[in-house]
Length: 278
Picture 1 (cartoon, helix red, strand yellow):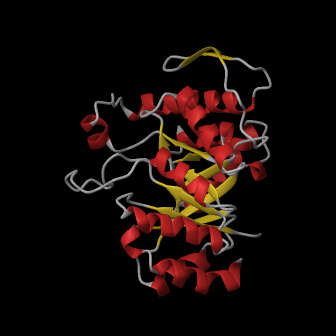
Picture 2: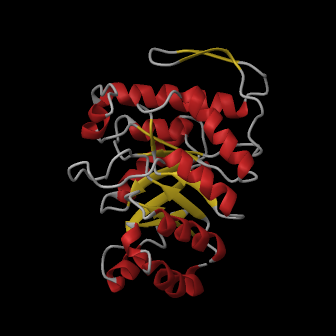
């Protein structure tokens, strides 16, 4: 099975020119994916005083400065944006990038950040309910042939809402991030084009659960790609071993993450991995 490689910026603290160097490098060096984090302050939290750039506007800049790499976020928190506005934002990025945007969604975790910016932060079960409604609305606004969409949920609603123009892509891929076996993985099986998770010891078991749930939903499990996240903050031999250990685990995307302070490792990663695995 062919595996695609991506670059993810973990903490969005910049410097801005360093982030720009990363997405330009990803585009020119043959990577398949470039993604950002969806946070308003440093993550994990370290006091709240470190620089942090916003995800949508950052990807807008990346869209006009790249030509081939796909663009997304791991993942957008459903508590932070109205889904109708979010669909409009990603549709705009899709047009700016000539059809290269993906839509990553998750229930969120950064309670300190949410409270700092005045967002309601309900318990995780409620946020999972929000995620389910959100995924349906995004798919509806991206795909529906009808020029108007309607949706009435407990948390979100659309009333004769247009999304004009539609994205350039026939189908914008929806990624759902998380590993909760009771709530998140059933949503993956029902709505996702790609499942995103950290590559921990229990990945094979969780992946099998996604397969089983997809079949119950009447979907072919092969329709749901698997994106695994690894950190490049570890010494290179350990990183390479982790990559090699995951090559036969059915992963579509291997997305490697590090803070921009370690951006010099991009070249090392590309030169060492691409000849063997591209």
